[in-house]
Image (tube, rainbow, N blue to C red; front, side, top):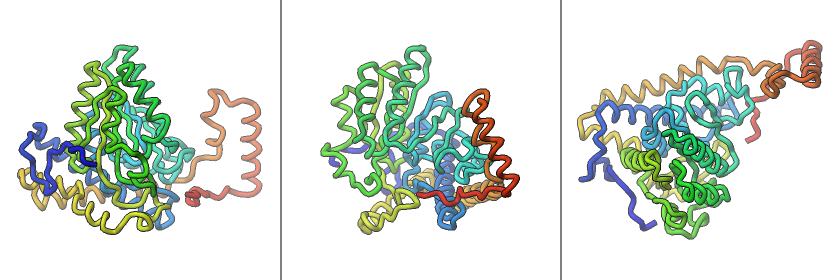
Length: 371
């Protein structure tokens, strides 16, 4: 990993001699607040899973700069095809916390009515395509959406996120090649956090970097410090501008680290050296940005404390509001399949309703999610 990484913030949080993008104080604070909210959501939800209040969670602590810095560079009308470790993008776009938490519980407030895994959000009205578990499938979907935008001659840009493990998938190679040949307005964002579950980076590819792969496809490749929110924003903004101008796709490799398990079912202590965790802990993206904002007199200790307390309160209040919601109604098993329910499904629904009357309410097994 010898190729230089784009940086705006030094490791100690101080600004490098390069300009910081000229963002106003209000935008800098919004970036910081969104990072704090993302961390608060992750920490609380991991606790809820450990308490057995829902069955599964995918944390992203340590990766907030990648999520928020890149999300801020897109326009609201741009489409995002996310991976399953980017809750900050949803929060940045204004998705209500209540709706995200309802997905985790799979209750009646969940837009997917419990049909998706936890942490697999989908919000059409925010131009956020459904998260899916198969690795890399969102990459070619994003390219297709980008080509649709190009054919329609609108100014939409499409962003898609994936881990370094996703670069080993067929869809990565297909998507990159097709997007480059046809100059699709797509920004490919690789979250290189060191491990694809337990598989380390060096077992994933023999390439020195992920960014260098872009050269083979005929597009720019940028390697950015993924714990530097301002550098991520700058790199993504340049890629978005390039795509919107009709100049085609860009691959961004954000080098960061997953400061926790792959999921609530994983134990990273079994394969990540303790020294690696300690080294990356000192590079915490929130602490780093905090030092910058304090140095620039945009933030002080009192306001910093208030921001984190508010974030925790917002998450706690959302959980309190939605946790008691009932499971999806029985009829939802048969709805949203056809525009008009066919006779055989209607017959099955009535039979199930009769069984419920005879035997009582069915047990809600959502907390026993198998992962």
